[in-house]
Amino acid sequence: MAERTSRRATGVVAAYWSAASSGRFFTWWSAAASFAVASIILVPVQDGGGAAAYGRSVVAAAIGWMILAVPVAGVAMLERRLSGALARGVLITITLVAISVARTFVNSAVLSATFGDLSTGPIVTRVLTNLLAAFALFPVVAIITEGRRRTRAITERLAAALDRLDAATAVAADRAREATAFVTRIEREVRAGRDATLAGTVDFDTVRAFSERVRSASHALEEQAASAERAPALADAGVPARAADTRLDAGASAAALPTVRRRALRLAPTPFLWAGILYAVLCVPFVVSLSGNILGATVATAAIIVIDLVANALLRKVPERVLPAAFFIVWLLAGAGAAAIAHLLLPEHGPLMYVPAVALPAVAIVLALALDAHRSVREEEERSTRELAEAAADFAVESARAPEQLRHAASMLHGRIQGRCVIFAALADEHPPTADDIARFRDETDTALDELLPAHDTPPTGGFDRMLAGWRPLMDLDTRIADAAASAIAQAGDGSVLTEVVNEALVNAVKHSGARAARIEITMGDSGEMFVRVAAPGRLPRAVMQTRSFTGRTLLFQDGDDVVLEAAVPATGATVNA
Image (tube, rainbow, N blue to C red; front, side, top):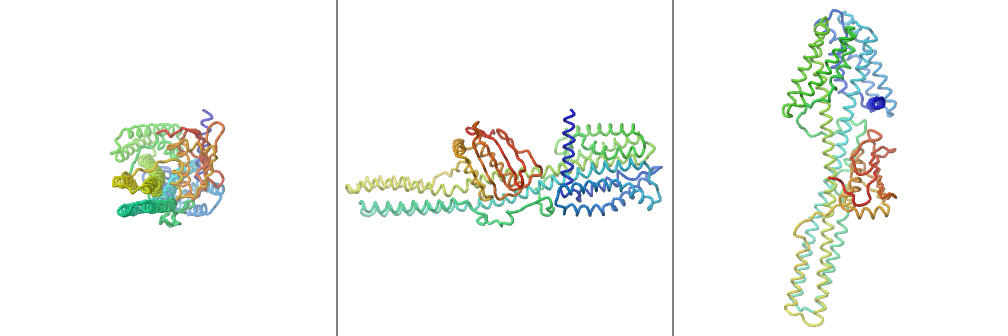
């Protein structure tokens, strides 16, 4: 239990530091959230209470927020200019402490100067309340917005890569159509040459001359196949290089981010206790400083937790089509219940105790909207990732059509038609061919010519080499494969784990940096496993991240300036589970 608690505490600290050192801790989102909390919930308390006093406190708190927003805006500009994560994290931490302490005195001064009122409550408790609110609210907003920004940056890189692949696939499709037209022209020329040969005097020399024409046509097809086999470069695909080289780092502007597909708003239930605990962290110290009633605050906290559990349990039973409306209704009722409990526990503070009626639903709605925004860009990232992998596979298939079609036609001319020519020439050299001999030669060559273009377009099969070919328009691949590993790859065939692992690594390279180059190293271990390492320039949000699970050990981590995926996979006979 102690070890688990320690791990959670470490995770919280790590999440805070990641947000504080991100370079985008203070944003418009954090400004809006902090203004709402500062001017509605954490207002300066006055003796006597009452609606009028609460209204004056709201105005004073709003003015105090605006005063403190000026230096915080300066910090926000400075954090974007600092290059070191440590410097940014220290700056943000000092700023949070400073504004939490200063806010107590600024609010008191504004309340006194504006309305002549005095705020009450122990200074230490009020400062502690501000500290808890600042370190609870700002990091949560920063984590959500930074996660959203990073995910949208990933979507941008995936979209740019997808555009390049789609353009390259279009070029490959054009080449396939050109190859079909070229084969059709060769077929017509060969057929016409054969008919002309058979219409005249048929002897060894005329058949041999026709055979040489077939041989020349076969060589022309092979040369065309070699030319068609070159993967379309970026310039061939018609995509500007600057679009392909898109990079979005921690300082990228929001305007540079892509637009995620519009979809219906989904106010899904928040995780159990999130809204209740966040509200309690923001409000309980305030209630204690207001009333000094620790027991009452404890009971109120327990009631808020129960209300959270009940509200989320109810929402999880609501049909999805009516969930947004039900979300508002349930949390408004939850807020009304929290306000009623607060009024029962602290009736002497009057209208101030009705704040939970607005504050609790607001916390739940903000959390739900933030989670929905994060979920939407995450879904967009997953969709783009799938589309990119599929586009690479489609390009690999499409780019293989032209050379395979041309080589098939060359093989038919060289192997079947030229072979029949040799036999027919030998027969003509012995004696003039009979009508049956000529008819047989015509039928056999007609059959071969009819098969130069297959009746059904069968997509080429996959495999490791075909998968790599699909990525050639996106990046330069430096592939180093040990001889033993190359033999194992050839034996594994289509659907091998190795093919899936390397494909996943290349997807990650594009996702996390828009990489234009990658190094692939594959070696064979003594235990019969292949060890795969794929490295590409880039930067992960964290030093080690989860990736898709494959057979054997798989790691995705930061190594200097490279994003690296390492895996150990079975050498032979292993396929990815469906």
